[in-house]
Length: 483
Image (tube, rainbow, N blue to C red; front, side):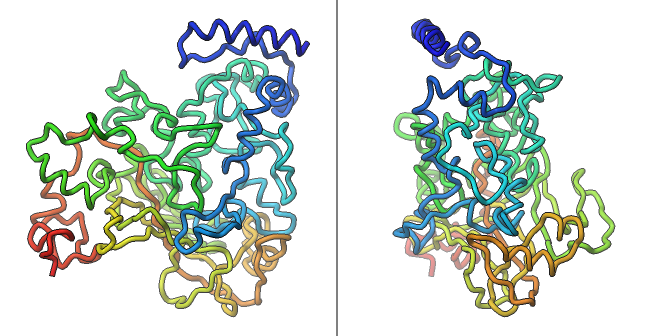
């Protein structure tokens, strides 16, 4: 059977040479079911694609950790950090509690099968989920053990693993979005301007990802996030590690450099020394649906009347209170390619001030920094009153069902790795995250105009950025007139 399938593969590859590269190889002749589970599909994929599985297992999509080359002051560290051992101000941590029971929820979107507890064999190739990134049909859905987005939303009916396996092709927006639209536990919750409405976006929402029939370029994620050996380029503003970067200049430079035909080309060229492309070309984010802007864990268990904000509830007894935003105007900050990042166990010097979970590094004096747009996300989380660090707490059962903070904190400290002792006393502190607005690029006619930032425009907080006043009046950072 394996020899026969290999011969069919060779024939298919020869045919593919003369076909469109985008279409890829039709796998319908190579795949033979039935399949009882996703790992059965992977085992068949491995007969021809063992190298690809090996490559996947070297990436952060698989390990959920990497050396902290993005974090200022930690660039030389050899310890690996990622979703597996870091903390945020959404669902907070993925590893707390006895036997890491929360993995079952948080690791829904890991590119593998079965990471439901602390122990997981990262060397087992059969656990690589090939379908989640490549399936196009078959109603493939990991909802029972995974994300909220249904991979089979394009068709109705029960999941058909054989049909799914036969349909594999290059990844689409829907494949990547299956997980990346759902950061923070739901569609549009975490990331700025990255949600399922992009699947039907028009040019106004995103000039790159909108389909051509809607005036866009019809681009896929990998058109910008270049991929080599399954390692995907991109540096998240929330994560400690990146393999390689992606930037607007990857396409928009040289003969394709922007603003060449603009009557204000000289002025705009000066701006690009201090202002990132995204700052002008992403004037608002989350145009399609609202994103979560605040999450107060301190309200868990309270009896608060839930109201609706942009069709989203503002309170859930097991999770706390929320605020939502749509067509959100970003906040702006300097970024030089590094971030400050709160790591598990970091001591909080002044609990009366907001704790920065993730924040861009840079200032007006840093010639390598530019002004970028961000989603400014706030919340409250428990801090150990004695040890002065953010607690790891068990969301499942003790908090989500029993609303018992004490038991949640006691159990949250019980794990084999990363968890922290709980002194028996806690208090809530404010936390903030700067989440980069990188998607939903507007068409050029919707880019920011001079008066929105200058000449009395209120978009920019110039003093917060280090200027004495509007740089149009007092001079830019390279003009020598700031003082």
